[in-house]
Image 1 (tube, helix red, strand yellow):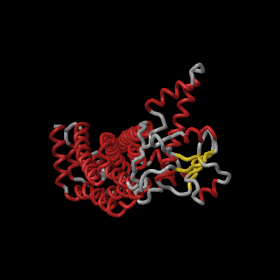
Image 2 (cartoon, rainbow, N blue to C red):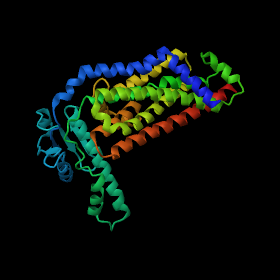
Image 3 (tube, rainbow, N blue to C red):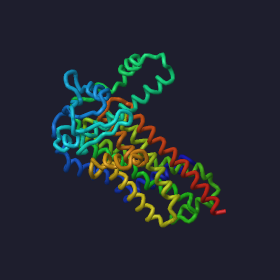
Length: 369
């Protein structure tokens, strides 16, 4: 029964022209338009050393040692007596304040400032890890920890001196949108649990003797297969436009798969939470995931950095931001620590959505008793 329902769900989705258009064609149209309109961003040249000022001497030394090649360093440490003036006059790209809780101050939000942000976050993560290790064993030599970590995961030498395309930030948000568009299929699954659904077959399902869990599971698998097909097509098209991403394909697929599952569960949750017409649920879902992509930088790539300063929690709870950050960490950094943290963030959101779905489903059952 599961396999039969799975096939029927796939047939239903692939034969629905409007579903195919909005789920499959729309991301391709966006990718094409973005490629035509912002491709000139990629022609700005190779990565250049970023001038920064750092308040703490130890932090300045660490960041100053990071290299993009054997001869070229990632950051040039500038002595600054008035960082606001230096930022305004573009003498420095960023100023790093504090010693424990580091804060990055920038004038403009661009690729360079993004690299400063991500590097400082990586530094704080490593510093925190060292602190925990030393707290557990006071006899351990800090230099041994540093040497061990440097072999594989050191913050140094993790920049590629080849050109990094700033425009890819926009394309990553389109991939995130393709993942989250699975929410439309998630709404259909959520409707199976709604006795007042406008879908004709739902009432027949609810009164039939079929196992509801097997039915929902087969529907979910069918919707997930279709949604992954849509996402993978978008990835394939992006690889045609940006062939340099091919080496990152395995990680991109893993991120996209988890992102699509997240989008699907998001749609189920929307369907269960909203007591309104089906068309309204689709519209609200679309508005939310497009707005989510806006916050991730789809329209303006500086948006996530501005929001991070004003409301940092958004970068952990906004689905598109979390997915996009994972893509960015794959591309801009060889170190896997930040990428894995973002994957765990996606998994945490998936678990939270599952818990909310189970809670909402149980509440609805109690209401119908």
